[in-house]
Amino acid sequence: MRFLKVMLAVLTCLAVTLTGVLLFVDKHGPRYIQIDNSED
Image (cartoon, rainbow, N blue to C red):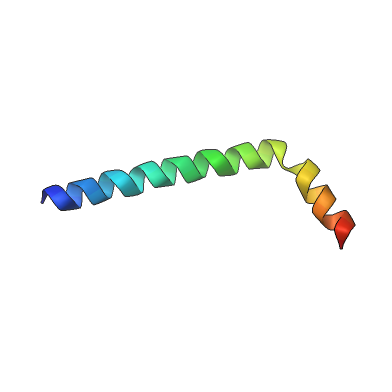
């Protein structure tokens, strides 16, 4: 049971981290998206 709780905690932390990264990229990412599009 402890292993499952640890895995759940790790997955939760990863989900929160990924969500934060995606929100940060959504706010600050258009510059990089424009650069990528100009390269095409």
